[in-house]
Length: 264
Image 1 (cartoon, rainbow, N blue to C red):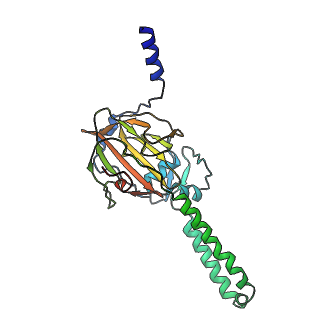
Image 2: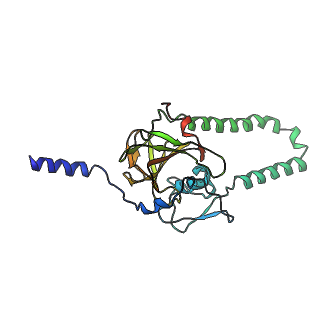
Image 3: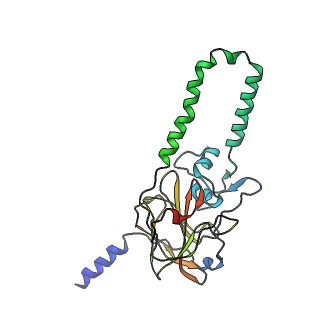
């Protein structure tokens, strides 16, 4: 009987890998430290070890898709330490260049506009319609959101200044932090200042969710998770524990998680 119990212990202990990160650094984070960082004056970010394109975009409140496009980084968005990431996208410069080119063509060739170009107008008007259709498809609801932990909200969402970009939820000691919806883990570590042991889950091309100040992380990057799967063990900020800081990003921008979570 004792051998059977020991074997069961081994099997359950190997069901997932526990990622241990130092919790001492968590005590230096104050209540307003979880915030979107401002873009450096240089407009660039130097990749540090352990960072992902998703964590960099999350740090600066950017859309990871635009960040990847600006830096010509194809999926699955592999980056390397010391790599320079351009934070200021090139879309503005491209649009300005296209606007300038259209202005010059109109001024230099006014006669052409009254000829065959009238037959090409329908094809040009179809392009933005197709893009809009793709955006609406990517913007489908994630599904049934669920609370990451069972507890009460002690700090609400604010999008003003450096205030909280998410909500703080107080739960029971040792509670498991769970995925709020189906998705893929795109970051698991403690490299973002102000977030402690952090897990970021990508739900689709539009929505990300983040789980901060964990005591221990139970998942790895690139791991697929279902709603309700355990991501971490709840931790806290300084003496304010057990506590989870939870954020939801839509197209890189923080939104109030209470707008997607089911009402209690």
